[in-house]
Image (cartoon, rainbow, N blue to C red; front, side, top):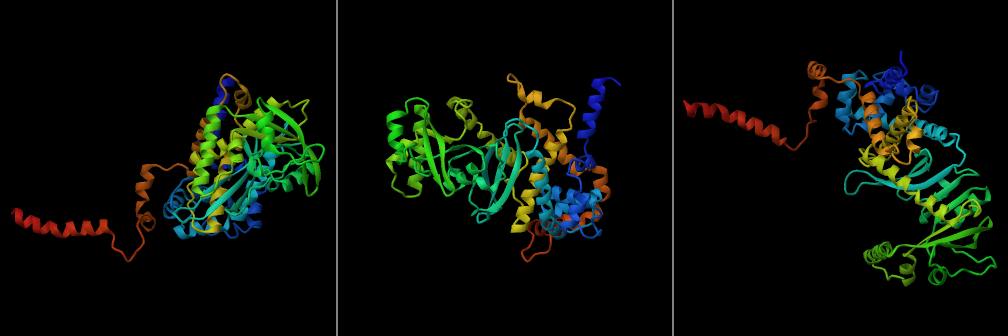
Amino acid sequence: MPTGQRERGACQAIVEGGDWERVLERLVPGWEGRAQEYKAFERRREVRSAGDLLRLVLGAAVQGWGQPLVASWAALVGIGQLSGEAVGKRVRKARAWLSAEVGLLLRREAWAGRSVRVRLVDATTIREPGGGGAEWRAHALVDLEAGALCGLEITDRHGAESLLRQPIEPGEIAVADRVHGRRTDFGQLLGRGTDLVVRIGWQNLPLHTPTGHRLDLIDWLQTSVLAPTERAVLVETPTGTYPLRLLAVALPPAQAEEARRRVRQAAKKKQRTLDQRTLVAAGFVMLVTTLDPTTWPITDVLALYRCRWQIELLFKRLKSIWHLDRLRARDSESAQAFILSVILAALLAGQVSAAAPIPLDAWLDDPARPLSRWRWETLWHDALLQAIRGPLDLLTLLRRLPSLQRFLCDSPRRRRHQASAARLLLRSLHPHQERLCA
């Protein structure tokens, strides 16, 4: 068979709709045993296997359907005869198992062999439905080169962002925004040899000169920073004092004015008196780093920090392509299971795509026409969704329609169903209209 034809056949096998078994092959071995270990799958009742259970749970999260519709789909594709309430119970019970599978896939991604490992650190908020819905926070670690998650922790809205939430190892470079500029975090990471590139504000990270005097950051910005520049500083932490490079670059006038406008708007919204030093600092980007200046000049450090935006793009893909922001849950256990299911589905799509017989790394490295992660992930989202959903044709749906009444019809309620009442009213008027016509 010619090479091109063989490659097309392999790719067709990967993306073939309903190819759920091929997706399961990308899980870390031992996943069936872990389903029983974490008590997600204990008895073979309606759902006959751990693979069917995972398909049910991912289907409940990725398809964007309510529980009754998920239950009708499960009956159609042969997963099992479950009520909508039973679907919700299975999802909640699978939370610990989902967390374990996500963690193992992330660990496998985190240790993929790369010469320089850059870790982007940030968090995103996910809200439950309704005006008073609870907020959840996904604290993420992203490998810059792979553009993929390699660490994740889910907390409620009170869980503070921190560089210590993720396993950033010695020799790796952590890149983070100014909310992570805290001395306690710095001390623990610097003490074990992790490099940092972190944006700071003018007052959240006290710095000292090499002689030990407190640095007046605003005075230095106003008198010294006309072009990208840096200076040596010290940071005092609970575990010791460490040397850092302080870098600063002035924003272009239009961007600086926009940044100051946002600062004024935020102060007005919170009814606070605006400190003039905040307005000065808003016109600059200030970074601290431990990277060696001989191998990392200031322009390269600034370019590396600009790559932090890649984690924001990943959050956008998770919310826009995988619909992570459509949280179909109203209790803590269900919400966490839903978030973990979506993350696991996204990770599995990436694992399956890694088996493609096409050199995607070369496409990503192409400076003229690089691979669009957005388009690629959109295609893989659809391929995985088909693998989960399976073949569902109109003939099967019509043939099985009588058995779906329990799923497709609403539950009894006190308030009258207006559509049904209107239909009954029209039926009652119909004989009277016939007599008038005669």
